[in-house]
Image (cartoon, rainbow, N blue to C red; front, side):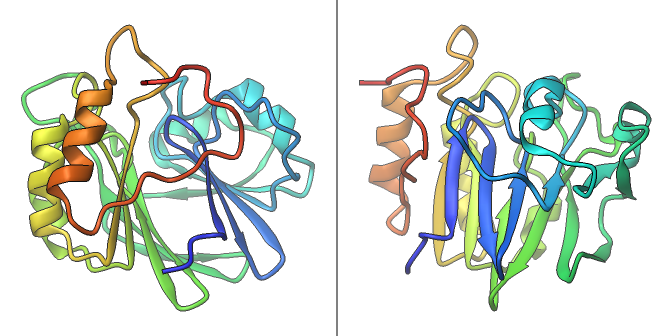
Length: 216
């Protein structure tokens, strides 16, 4: 499967190039000279996902933002679509749906705050960005081409639960995310290697800028 249109920035941040548009998800720690955003999707309001510094680097007055309701108050003055978990939407010609994203038994991401993952349709393909989440029941209904799932293990599910998630999510390709940037709390070469070894249809996506930290 060709993945040239999907570019990993850092942490949980991605650039998707579709139909001449630049679509970002949770841009964070942007150091490269990246194109301005047509649409920016935000999964929740934590600093490493809703990063004002990175938003300023990438956005213009025309940039459309998609954010959960809980984050909308931080985005005043911008073109905004506020979304809720478990619904379908369209923005700037892009069809997408939302999946709940939350922790189980931890308080970093309560279900009540309404954080989301996104399933974004790109040229007939469906990309699932899970957001900051544990292994949750709502993943059982996800049927996509590409699934981007966290393995960090402090704020999100760890690699063991991420591997379990690959058994309930239907996807042609799985890629781990959210494990290289916050090394004081999460991230290891061992987790990456474990994911790669035990998930046969896994890929480690190349980053479009030099990562701050190397796991090797």
